[in-house]
Image 1: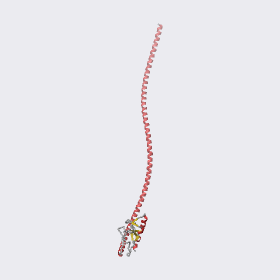
Image 2 (image 1 turned 45 degrees about the horizontal axis):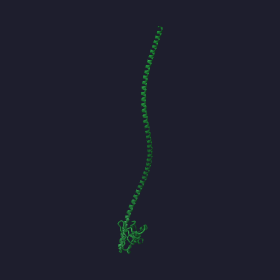
Image 3 (image 1 turned 90 degrees about the vertical axis):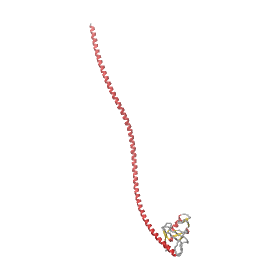
Image 4 (image 1 turned 120 degrees about the vertical axis):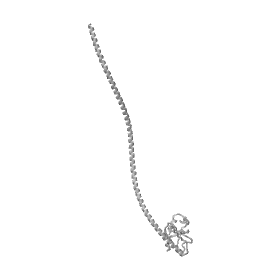
Length: 252
């Protein structure tokens, strides 16, 4: 039956029965669904998706294929654009020409069906590839999440180590300050020790000098004692001599 002929809608690029096709005065035809969507999509004026001429919903009329009846109004055309297939709905009064044209359309429809089958296989292959890619993406997402968890763990460890390093750095600075204070005290102690050593040396020299002076003084005192004993001895002798002299003078 001619009504079972499948043609392609130039809007959604899929095959639809010829009885569901509608054409406008500009000669371009579309399926009922796409026409309804076109007129519901926005405010008027509406334009033909193919030639951009103004169209109205009431101007859409059905296409008939009948060897004894014209397809559309005289002089109208409805080209089909896909895969190099052009469907011409131009009026023809020759029944043989119309039948031949319908046969050609059926042949092209079978070719388009074969092409559609090939494209469906290709689409299925692409879907399998997409499914495989999605699985790989899921695996990569899992790996990314695992790496993210490891990264967060390392970040936490890094924060702990940084805090520990900060604590050790503060302690090191305290120790350095304590060492600086001790070094100053050591320097003061060394200076004090040096002064004490010098004072000790001075005291030792003074002690030696004092001992030497004492020895000299002892020698002087000893010499004075010798002189005193000698003086006393002389004085005693002189006293004895005077006594003798006085005694002898008394008897003379």
